[in-house]
Length: 113
Image 1 (cartoon, rainbow, N blue to C red):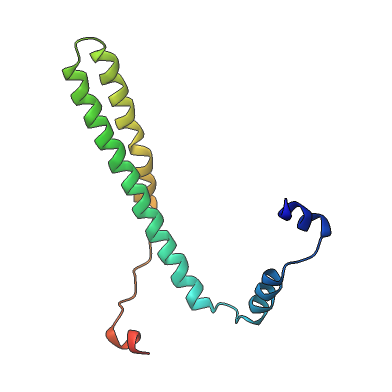
Image 2: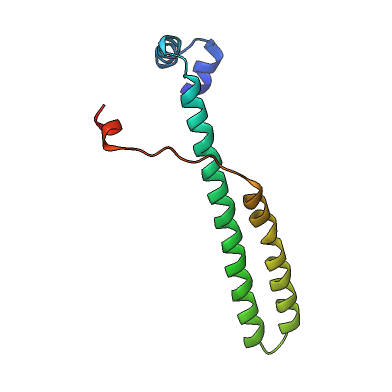
């Protein structure tokens, strides 16, 4: 109820005003930092796509195993496992197409600065 009343007043909170002043005083991100951040994002995306692909392959293997254990519907389960296995190719190929930049070597000296 208090939030609704505050939204009706159309006043900015003190926390938001403090955030705006801090944000205005921040130094803009340097080009090198942006490039490093973009390279790290690309590496993380590639890793995420590979994790998704591997999890789909594991799921397909489990479904294949279940298709051999079941007395009825084994063919349908095996068919679904094949479909899941084929869908694993989508994120795997997407990860293979990505070419992440090499990560710069971090030394102990960079940590001391």
